[in-house]
Image (cartoon, rainbow, N blue to C red; front, side):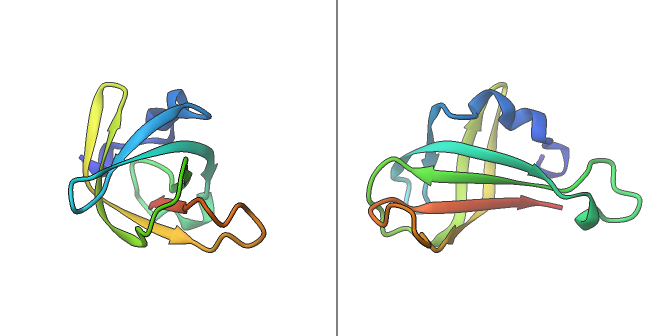
Length: 102
């Protein structure tokens, strides 16, 4: 399933509240902040281009990284790896995360 996911699957979630289900099964309210195509990271012969999805939590969280579940319009991503990014000048009470597809 993950190899079929495209940037367009995430577009309806931009700037909307959604839920990321963490490895322990808990639900973390999030927002998809941005989508970025990364054509230089696309593997030769790949059927879709590489891209990344930037998320942020809507409240404090200790979650760092792991395999999560993320409902999308028309599908649910299972076992997608989500990694935390440093706040670096942003609200330190929130978590900032990235999902990379290449």
